[in-house]
Amino acid sequence: EALVDQESAPARRLVERVDRFLPLVDRAIAQATRRVLDGETVPAGEKLLSLFEPHTRLITRHKAGKPVEFGCKLMLDEVDGGIVSRYDVVGEAGLDHPHLKESLAGHRVRFGRAPDLLAGDRGLYTAANENLARQVGVKRVVLPQAGRPSRQRQEHERQPWFRRGFRFRAGIEGRISVLKRGYELGRCRDHGEEGLGRWVGWGIVTANLATVARAIAARPT
Image 1 (tube, rainbow, N blue to C red):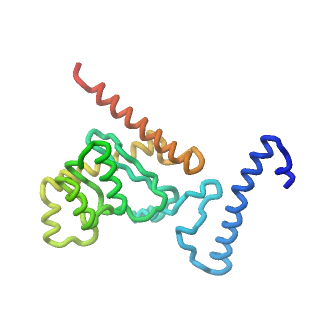
Image 2 (cartoon, rainbow, N blue to C red):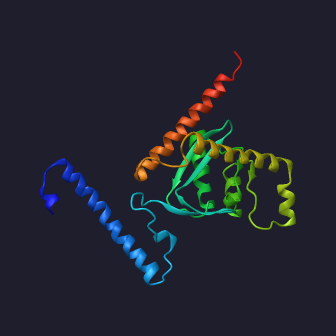
């Protein structure tokens, strides 16, 4: 109340910070009470993981040695030539396959047609996604089936064009590694959700420009 009565700019900035952090502190106390004193399991979507970056989420990787990570999930679309044509900072760290529809729609907006080849990992596979891709005009859909595939499915995924498509998809893993190591996408040094969006966006723009510059430099003179 004393700060509110002051008209100075520093006092107003401090009031804004207090107004932002006090509700988060109350939420953290309530969360700790539920977990420690009451023995309640707090759902991941309700957990507050950071006072300073409350948008941080739990990400289950389903990989050996990395069962859970903290951060935000980033969806990347890459086209031939190593250009990231679209990205999306996902608010909820859930399943991947619901986002395929947005990826296909984004590609059609940017390029005026569906891609000839759609390649993704097992997290994007559903029968509905395969059908959707074919309906919008994708000629070759390379989405390995999760779980134990049938013999018919195994034969389908052993076709040469499917294997070539999956090797193309594997290149995105290298792109992710380069973005994390070379363009600082492994850790955001800005603040807030808007800051995260800026950090990711500028990192991808810079990486795309570097890719274009290398391609131009490699052209024969």
